[in-house]
Length: 310
Image (cartoon, helix red, strand yellow):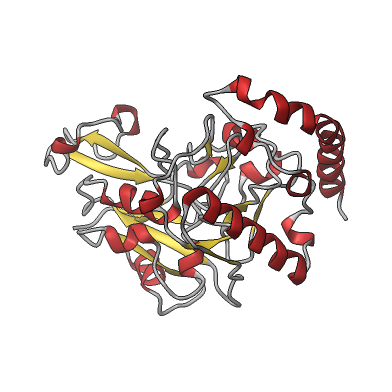
């Protein structure tokens, strides 16, 4: 066990020691915190003291998934399946996005929300679409606006540049987490264990891409809109007070499907694939087009590449 792991475990152990003692009192007074929380949001002692995902045995996970499925069915009235797809061998996922083709329609944004069970009220979106004036300046982030009206999408006077988690090779968000609730998997996807996160928001502050989201209120997803195809480290319902982020739809991509945002793009601006496969579409784009990464000077080494081509 390295020093960072020891430090993380110690911090969480200290945190749990204090919280476990006060869980009963917190539960009794939870109603007073409405509308931010309620008694149903207070985790059980078993859930709160759950071991880190990386240390769970297969049998542990089976029991935890069953418990979560039962709770989701009780809350939403929908039967779900929580899976745990593993990273594939010899695969590192990468993404390319053609700014020259993006029309800023935000179909990717809403497909992502639907697929990943993000809160509708308050609304949480993993993708921000930046709109930038052309005016001969090219890509100018200083002039970017991400709050433009939907009916103004597709304006030929603007470039559109979606920004989401860059799945960094050197992710600063992972380094700052005091309890090791977030980490990079071998296929390059940075994940979060929502049951381990303590909501300190250090990762949010460390991310230079504004890719992390914090649940200030209990996430709300209508039962009729809940996607029942879930993964433990991906799109299962989140809790009040925890972080979440894009995971390249790992519940889809690790079983051979594209992320929801790729399938939703009407112009083919988004491409996704295995960076280690020389025949993959993303590899060919990276090798044959002029590509760049966002904020390259920071040394985060994103696996999300932007290209400008018609």
